[in-house]
Image (cartoon, rainbow, N blue to C red; front, side, top):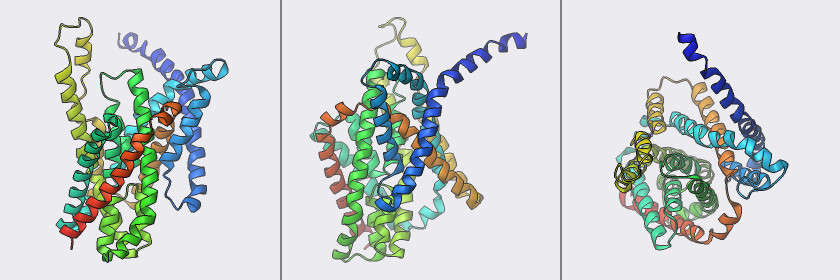
Amino acid sequence: MPTILAAPRRPETRAAATRLAPGLVLAAVATLVLLGASRLLAPVTGGAVSPLVLALLVGAVVGSVLGRVVPRSGRAARFAERVGPGTDWTARTVLRAGVVLLGLQLSIPDVLALGWRGIAVVVVTVTCTFAAILGLGRLLRVPRTTSLLVATGFSICGAAAVSAMTSVLERDPGSGGAEQARLRDDVAAALALVTVYGTIAIFALPPLASALGLTDHQAGLWIGASVQEVAQVVAAAGTVSAAALATATVTKLARVVLLAPLVAGAGALRSRRAALTAPPEGDAPGSDAPARGRRAPLVPGFVLGFLAAVLVRSTGLLPDVVTDTAQQLTTILFVAAMFALGTGVDVPRLARTARRPLVLGAAGAVAVSGIGLAAVLLLAP
């Protein structure tokens, strides 16, 4: 009897694997190429351009050629249909796995070494920046999802934070194909802004820190609390001094620790809002019950996995080879996920609607730098 019950699952599993295989192979090949290209470009860009952003751009080009967003006919259309399920799975599942592994880069004792003043600078900067960018987004009439992704990327850790928040937004039970397509465009816009304004910060903040007479410790705190990407923080603080670089790196990691509560809070808020706006059971016969049965948990599973990974790393029991390997694997997973997300970006629409997000990014860059500087001067004199 058990063999009779188990037998039908094998064809289903094999069929699912066959359906996902073309997209998974495309994402894997693209990831290998992108990682190689990123290494070649690193000396030229100084690490200012994240491989995640490069992956999204290449994915957008590939998606446009295949016609995943603007339908085409012929071989390109047939190929796009074949790779679609695999790239969609990569953009969702692989992305969440990368967020979990990101936790292995964070150690609570290292963060606590900043002292209460340094931690206060981080908390104030992240909280105020996030709120400020959301408010600016409303004033500029930028779509709520775009504002949320930009606020997350600017206040926490750039592309990785945008990726984590994307996983929460994809869990929205009421979102359909059109909403998911717009979400990919919003992700592309947020990542582009992180790259542009983070690169500007590399060249702007070190001379400003010198002109303001900040100590190396203060400069490291300011850069670590204000610049978006880890690589951008290293590039900026490294031009000040070794002491500033050490402080900036730990400060940046402290910001990443706040990713979990921020993403969990956003997920809980969206779930609560969806529950309040959902029609009463019985108003739409045959439609509400399944949706209610599939209601997502308040705290996403990948966020719990991220927190567990942080706790494991904080024990100090993991050898360096494990943490180094986890860091490289995290980058690989994020690159694959960003490429897959990019294949669904509507480039023409993104170009038409980019003006207001660009202004929001400029205002957000000023906000995070100003708030971070004020926090350093007031809390870590």
